[in-house]
Amino acid sequence: VEATPEWAAEIKRLARERGATILAHNYQLPAIQDVADHVGDSLALSRIAAEAPEDTIVFCGVHFMAETAKILSPSKTVLIPDERAGCSLADSINAEQLREWKADNPNALVVSYVNTTAEVKGLTDICCTSSNAVDVVNSIDPDREVLFLPDQFLGAHVKRVTGRTNMQIWAGECHVHAGINGDELTAKSKSHPDAELFVHPECGCATSALYLAGEGAVPADKVKILSTGGMLDAARVTKSKQVLVATEIGMLHQLRKAAPDVDFQAVNDRASCPYMKMITPAALLRCLLEGKDEVHVDLEMAKRAQKSVQRMIEIGN
Ligand code: 13P
Ligand code: SF4
Image 1 (cartoon, rainbow, N blue to C red):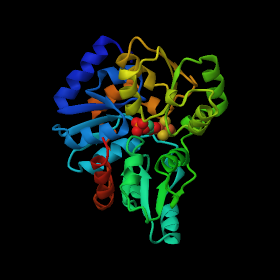
Image 2: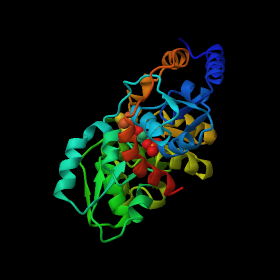
Image 3: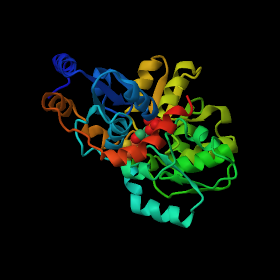
């Protein structure tokens, strides 16, 4: 199946027929982004899913995102074009491990990144995404111990920005972002001295980006640690002619659309998420034709997870 204009028209027709809205994450293939009703980062898509008037949500993203939509709207039908689209970061902690961690720290408050399973969310006090992680941690009583999971690089970033010392961080990582390393970033920014740097906090290189700024290799105001939604906001107002982007490469499509005159370049052009890319034009077509794969979350588990996700969508902009 090719992503032709006929394919796009058929997708739109089938979605209308099903009363479905199509949501796509910023890391999806360009053709999927272009056919979707809404494109955004994980926080924006969660909010849209929660408020969508349609009874069916087709989530073009990875499984935990579709699951989050289902947790927020248990009565809606939530479809994902390929349920095998997982996430290496969400796999880096399971419910049993979190139960043990909590048992060792009975008074701590648990903050989980949205990249987690429904079961882990059910053991969580507040969820966050990369857009509002700092606001979420700042909303917590400064005397309360925090357990932050599962991403160590996002955790380190939040700790740095909030200055919080009573915060333990799980040692998980996303294999795509962890693979964007500091050496590549250093080499790329040295060979493009006038370029601005947009770095996703899940990157292994987030720390070295700040180090570079501290060393004077890149002026501090040129380095921005941003969620994918934050990158788009920054792209719309940047005065730079060139921006180096450290995140999954699907992001370049929306950035180029948002600021066509800016030259956006990937720090690592092999940083492609194999899970995000499982959502192909053929998979989306099959999904709309057959109503598959449907996402189910056990109702009791959804209820437990809902409070933490609800708090996530209420905090930050
Ligand atoms: P955001 O869309 O919140 O920036 O998250 C990026 C990500 O890796 C989701 O898988
Ligand atoms: Fe998960 Fe990383 Fe892929 Fe995002 S880019 S879905 S965090 S594996």
